[in-house]
Image (cartoon, rainbow, N blue to C red):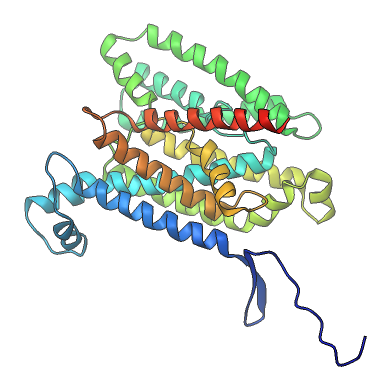
Length: 352
């Protein structure tokens, strides 16, 4: 080859582009960026629908004026005090559940590694039932749900740990713990009064109806703080997907990183569940849907957060306005999750 011949440019794939900014260089998945933009647009449309639609309908132009700070009387109260907290919560809580699901699925290397599958939601419900039976104060219910979810996650981790953590064993133990806690929850419900049991059962379906600024604001601050802690651990998350030996060979302290990530995933789920109740399948579906749409090799935290926010926001609009009477958003997400699981089983069966 002559010395004047130029080397061919390196191809990184149809969707990967090298970028350089100052002394920092890397790769950008343009397909992920495109999916993120589309998800943002759809989520924004769902957000506007959530604050505009209802028995007291507010026109789109008037809604924009209210959001810009132009007071328009009673409509401003409806939008800002009644509907906006719920719409913001749907986006923020959906993002938190999506990130939590991505963490669990990456750490366990199992597509069923989801907080609602391994018993965290059932543990939070146990805490709520205990608080309703003994304390009956909103703060006690919230704290008990948080502690119940954390306790369930700790039990699963301790029982599944055997000189390391196997993803399959973690999921199996989680399913067993979830079944046991569900049985305990049924026993507690049977011992409650009819009114208290009805309230608890509605909470157990997952709902955003009672969400207000006083409860949304501190939870969103906690979620933002947890996300700031998760970001530095994102590289370790990608390495853990390759296996313990591969992660250790790259300098990752496997057990320390895994425990830290699991604790963060548990906290993200628990703080959301303590306010809304267990919202099923968002944490399960969001990371895999983000991976499928973006074509990424592994779970991406940003894509999972965007997809989770989109799923919960759209599901909340559907639950509030598509049916003759409003239903808990957890019912809608459960239907979506059930359809997804059915599709996943059929797809896996065809691959054999």
